Length: 533
Image 1 (tube, rainbow, N blue to C red):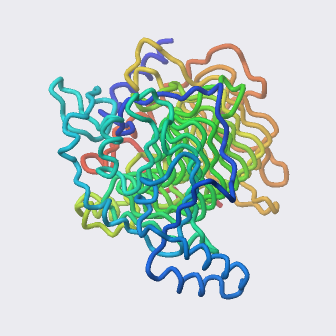
Image 2: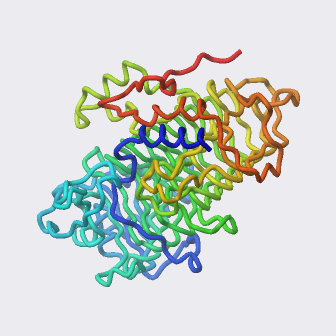
């Protein structure tokens, strides 16, 4: 136990001042009701948005599909809006909003000031450890925009805002519920929604139960390209997110959600982020992520308190790290993280060198508004060259994936003490009951050898963690940093305090800061390893 206490002390002392999501206090919707919305072809209210050149774009895009071209041109005749937000404002519950091919920069929304003096009294104060950014409050904490701020001043922080709860603020959708917002191009690139880094969020759905977003490209947010918050029932399908300063697709304290056939690249944090996922005690998975492709981000997929998530049949590749889930940050409901299930994913070649000295200098010295938005500037610390990182998680399942060509570790399991996130009373509450089974390690799906630097890294802390059926090239045993061998499933019920030198070797990495401490002493996370042979 003494060794464990030492490790906890090291991690706690190394903990950064703030790692969390810059948002108001958020709450889970009632998970006993709700459903993922289904696609609808008709509705009582159909609103059409277009640009001046939409007809020309339709003729070009559908040149080889004359029947569909004629249908789109007939739909275009019903266009009454030039801006998506204007159609959202007019929409009633259950409306379909059809966006014709074109580029949508939403100039009226851009003119809304931030902060908006109309909502000067609509902030709430939270502890300063709960967020990365905000206005210092009288109590020494920080002030963030409340839900009422979003309702009354929807475009202060958001290019397009779908705000569903009414003045009763009971966290249940009253208006703008069950909206379907769909790009009507032949390809998702035919409809482009561009934030130009002028707003925190390009699209925000806040308590907007039943929201369905489909078939467009979204780019250049200052925080999230698509943001789903406190929403019960959502679906994002056939959308491309590119070059968000932090997150591509993010859901937070939401339930009954589906990420479907998405592509995300160029995010400073993660392309896909199901944070503070729904609670279900591993009996249900309230958020599903499938058939998606996340690449060339700092992290392909991440989720602080990413609970109740089932991610399957996706590709996470050419990021700095492929996938992570964690119990690091304070202020995230659902801590500690538990009950993610990752199956049949391809996790490979996550070695992008976004933390090198040249990139550090560019991102540190170039003001955000002057940066090339297509250059990834990392906003969160991860070990370059890692396929999967579970940094404080319980009862997660990693099964039947192919994990190869990650030059540091294929999978990294590291405990995080509750004190790190400001909850010392919870003691040691990770890592327990994580299962790694039947994964192909260091070998491509076609059987070609393509090794990870090391297949499995573990700090040897916790109980019930187990590894079975994982195989390398030609069925060879996977490699690991555990000299005595990885425990087979179902694992031991005896608590292991871990190896303090392993824990300590990771601790200083948590002090990373892109401006003040880009290369923490004793940390090797940010140096890309050599390619293994």
